[in-house]
Image (tube, rainbow, N blue to C red; front, side, top):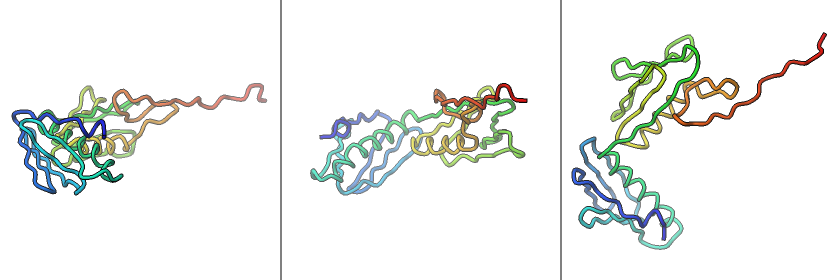
Length: 182
């Protein structure tokens, strides 16, 4: 039995979960999310807890059991609390700002890079160098943060670029000059 899959999901009081055979919909104060369930996975509710189980012991069912338990748990957490991903900008002259809903990045290119947030995503900037991506869909928050990081990923020599908060960037030694050159 999957260790992750057998853990029950606690549903907060302000969150509603509706499901039929193939679709689960979770509605809360932050928003509403829905997802199709595969035929191998069974979702059941007992009061304020959700349980994910599998129909049989096939390899596919075992693989999907823990995955869909985690996806449903993330949906419940997202519509009740929300998710956020923090990014740090390092480099002289590199900065970010929010104009309207869009994120505007000055990353050393000849132009500013504007990123429009998808529906359900908000941007915030602290000290011109810390970007916060927040929303209720964990997958969308992570994908949006990855797109921002891809504008200028951290380079290994000086460490300049956009990185996730707490991300360790492996540094390389630069070139060394030849001694005794005439």
